Length: 341
Ligand SMILES: Cc1cc2nc3c(=O)[nH]c(=O)nc-3n(C[C@H](O)[C@H](O)[C@H](O)COP(=O)(O)O)c2cc1C
Image 1 (tube, rainbow, N blue to C red):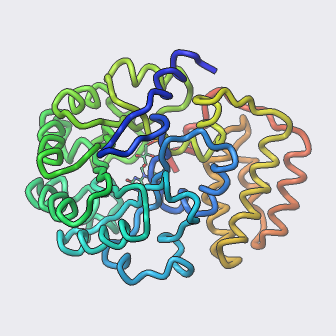
Image 2: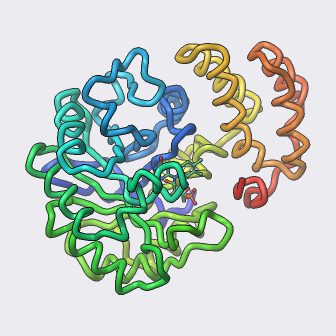
Image 3: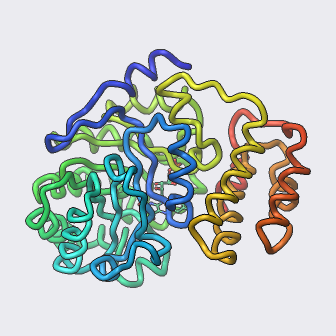
């Protein structure tokens, strides 16, 4: 464990009167940060907060938590679970926020970061960064209706202009956001080019609320560098948490992975997905998880193909047992080609 990193991360932080036990979060990821994966994470623990998959604000008020694949949770995780919503209409977003508060979530996160076409076409996610006034109206509308902590997750904008990102950050703070998670990439840019961490520092300097940095943190050295270089208040980890779900407990509590942890985690993921989803969705979600999980290995592409061969979970489990009879050769940093998928 990197002592310096662990000390920085384990400093408690209070947001809107609520204490967070550490400054290391799971970033929101659709198709990956679901109830089953979060249960897997909870077995290692070590995180401060977990962010849900993005949920449609239009659907949230009438959603059935026992049927919805995304707006679902275990009661015992609510005290550290933030629900992320997307939408383009202030009143709709506010109505969703009311339900989220009533259900007992720790907080709410507004998605102004997703740049996939299906979301942006509806003027949601990162599309709203083109309309800072509407984005700020959404934040204020949500703020007026709830008293739990309110996060905003966003990107640099649609142009490579740090000043624009700083201006957005100030608007969100003025509109009532309690904290920001900032991913320093320009919106159409998926994950092929590295994020510009220095812009996190610019955003941090422009507001007085906590700013969490995000993007391309793969190892402890990256985590420490981001904290030092940008002075951000904490970090949100996305893909690397899928690859190594024990990363939080490793960095904050000194957990040392041992035994055949890769086999155990992969099998456990299949079982948890079966617990929460119908067979076809469970398999689909396992295959999405497997992309990031396989990035741990030197021959990740081949391992991915081998474990995902088959259409049923029992078949997949058999393949996992075969592939992980011994631990495959690992790579220090994940296989980036797989990560950009
Ligand atoms: C498969 C996938 C789905 C994602 N879904 C969301 C999402 O629903 N909401 C969001 O704000 N960001 C989403 N993101 C972005 C991540 O939260 C994060 O900003 C990004 O992966 C960079 O962090 P990382 O380098 O630690 O993975 C997603 C990323 C991935 C890889």
